[in-house]
Amino acid sequence: MNQKTNEELQTLVVQATAGDKKALEALISGVQDIVFNLSLRMLGTFADAEDATQDILLKMITHLSSFKGDSTFTTWVFSIAVNHLKNYKKHMFARYAPSFEYYGDDIENGKIEDVPDLTQNVEKDILAEELKMSCTNVMLQCLDTESRCIFILGTMFKVDSRIAGDILDMTPEAYRQRLSRIRKKMADFLGQYCGEYGGGRCKCKDRVNYAIQNHRINPLKLDYMAATEIPVQTMIDVKNAMEDIDDLSQDFSFCKPYQSPERTRGLIKEFLDSTQFSVIQKS
Image 1 (cartoon, rainbow, N blue to C red):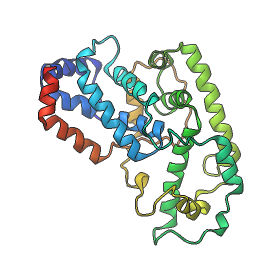
Image 2 (image 1 turned 180 degrees about the vertical axis):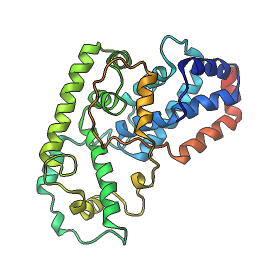
Image 3 (image 1 turned 30 degrees about the horizontal axis):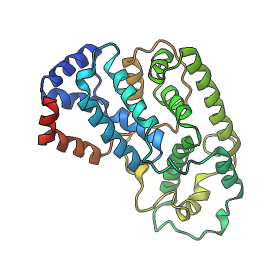
């Protein structure tokens, strides 16, 4: 993600709303990775995050003329994304959200030793890493939607409390208090059960076959291991772009940032090349 100053972004917005396609492409390029990462953490799977990212970017494009510069462009995009994701009902966990109790019981009582080898000749270390990233991401689904959003904004994107409060329609103090409680809840669970990020006995490598049997990972489709990571500095740049004034972050290292998938980039490009884009320009 190429970082630009707020002044540069505002100039691009003016140019894009006037019909400059290259300016619009630059705006999309600047935010598509952060939108995808927010969607991935909020929804839990790559497929759902790809679909939501496309929806959010199209919503951003069609509402671009409503951006008045009252906030930074990045904050404005985050607000669109958060509002969309908080009401998103098409993802896999919308109906069957897991709970910390379910996760803990599965760790304690899952019959992992009874499952045969299902790795299909894929290295177990690779599958264990895929499971680790998938498990900790899906674990976020144990939080209610707003708590999940608070945790992601505060922990992964390290968003300043004033900005986050504006996005979530709460006071900075309420946001900080909620964030502190949610972090503790997550840290307590990891400390009790997770052997990768805490002091628990659950080790991903021991549970690979059990996870394959329960369709939690697929040896032939490794989303996380196939994804391209982007530098953590990118998330810091996002925070700075949103006018950071305090440091409330805590390192939950499973919150790795990724590039948005090539399929998403391709579909957005197709839209920009279509006649539909020219219709939207005139609306």
